[in-house]
Length: 415
Image (tube, rainbow, N blue to C red; front, side):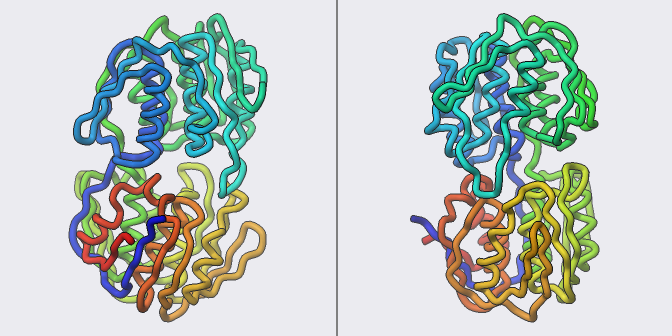
C-alpha cells in the first residue's frame, strides 16, 4: 500500500495550477447519459474517482475518448441500465446515474451505496423525489429499481439540503413532462456548474445557486462542450497549507468567488490575500491566529475544509472551536493529529483545539479524503518526518498532490 513521507519545516513558495473540481466533474459526466449526442468535457482532473465513473459509464454503453485533461462521451449505444455494487461501493457518486437513466430510458437499477467512513448519506431523498415525479421504485436484493414511462414535473421539497439529491433530480427533471421545482435545494457552486452544462445541452433551468430551482422539461437534449469549474476544495487546501507553513503562494486557474468563507477565515488567521482575475495570491508572515469554524451548507463554511482548518488551528496562537454540523463522524483525523502532538478535545460534534508551538512527525493513517489532506498539512509543519498511510483516499480527490507540493518546495515523496 502506498504512503506519503513528508519532512516538515519548509514554507510553501511559488505558483500552482488548480485542477478541475471532482465534485463538479462526477455529476456532469453522468449528464452524458441524457443525450445520444456527444458531450465534450474539458478541465477534467486526473483522479481515481473520475476513472471509476468513466468505467461505470462505459460499462453501460457510453463511448469515451480521452485527450489530455478532456474526455468526449457519446451516449447513442447505452443498453445496460445497471450500476453494480462493486462500482457504487468505491464511489458513492455513482448514485447520480439513477436520475439520468430513468428519465431517458424509463428504467434504472442502481446498487444501494455501502457505508461511508464520515457518516450516513441517505439516498431516500433521491427515491422520494423520483416517486413524486411518477417513478415506480422498489428495493430488491440491495438495488434500487426505478421505472417510469415518462417522468412528470413536480414540486419537491428536500427535508435536508442534499447536493447529490439536488443534482440527481435536476437531471431527472431535464427530460420530464412539465415543470419541476426543487425547494430547499443545494446552492453549491458545483450544482451551478451542472446546471450550466445542462443548459448548454438544451435544458431549461433557472434558480440554480438559490434554494429554489425550476426546471422545465424538454423532449430531448443535444451534445455540448463544457469546461469543468476549478476545484474550490483543492484551492482552499493549498491556501491553508501555505498559511500553516508561513509561505507565499499564487494559485492559477481558480476562482475567489467560490471560496469567500474560506478566504475570510484565512484573513482572520493573519494571511494577506490578493485576488486578480483567475489567480489568488496568499502571503503569511509569522504564526497563524486560531480561528473558529462551523460547517453548514453553502454559502456557509464547507464541511470539506473543516479538517484542513483543524490542522491549521493545531499550531495556531490561541484556542479555537470547530463545530461539524453536516456529517456525524467527521472528526476521525483528531486521533491522528494527537499522535503528532496536537491538543484537541472532542465532545459530540464540537472540537476544542488549543494551539501548540510545534507538532512532531510520526506515522499516521488517513481515514477519508479530507482527513488525508489535513494530515498532509500537519506533516508539512511538523518537526521531523511524518509518514501517512492509506493515501489512496487522497488520490480520489487531489490530482498529483505530492508533485504540486514538491513544486512549491515541500519535501514530500511517495513510498
